[in-house]
Length: 397
Image (cartoon, rainbow, N blue to C red; front, side, top):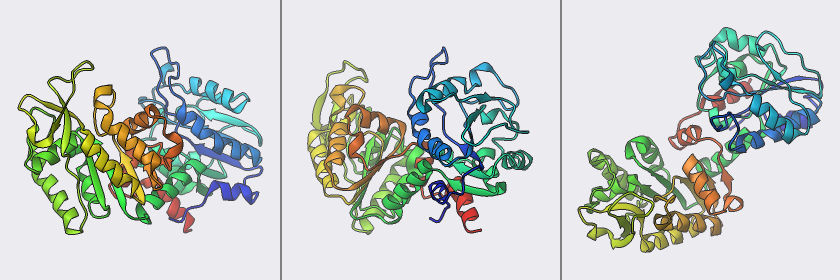
């Protein structure tokens, strides 16, 4: 994928004295008092901002936060808590600028944070007039927000069409490189883990991956639907019986290529979905009518772990059991540890996946942890993300 990289422009001295507009992803969770409860995205945006400052640029940064109503600014929509945290991380004051579309005062060596971009009328629908105005604010536009790369909005797409130069920041460039490594040119065997509550939400991902991967591990409620497709009992477990034929089609598509969808041979069940529910390991063929399947069993986990350790590339999206409850966490823990021990290049994404990675402390052992939820899933579906598309178009001239 050919795109311009901001790091290259900085290395060549092309950012010195230039007005640089960075679209970051600073959409962080907050408590009821507006305090930031988790700042990973802010910390992830710092290298791009520092790169611009060290290159001698006049730096403007913006992001969306929450779901504001366009044209109606409310105090809870403000990036003020983000400006404060960014100031702490950069070791300098980061002024917050409101009503910035018609002009911004910022000098080389300075950085300002532009108030919540989704408050601007026309942002979400990518209004061309708004995009042109924003493009006039800068000499170089930098997209460093993979989390919004699947949306064609004013600050993620429109401005890139009209800016003098449009390029990818280090975070976005790293995502592109990791995706290329995992999906475009993977070292084989390529194993994907796709888990979640419903097949329906990930059916297109499963269909897309079934054409490319050597092993497709399904987990959670998705696995229950695949167990039904394999003729196994699932008791009162969460599943989608109306999608059994689609599950069979995925199994058949994989089998036709000599690849497989491993079906659990044992499972961990309970009579209720609760933190204190007693867990019982059963053969997959012996699940009772009143059982809930809440994890894969140790035998299945060991087989999957062996498969992951022998893989060349691993894509991970979703825990394979209710890992929040320790008695149903064995499968996810085994998979996390196998990925950590594998020499394969691994890429992981999705909120629950990141929570599992943090729980088992394997951050340093995963090849690349994706910062985007929806964007990561759309890449797995085989879609071209709008942010990638416009940056490629601009790089081609």
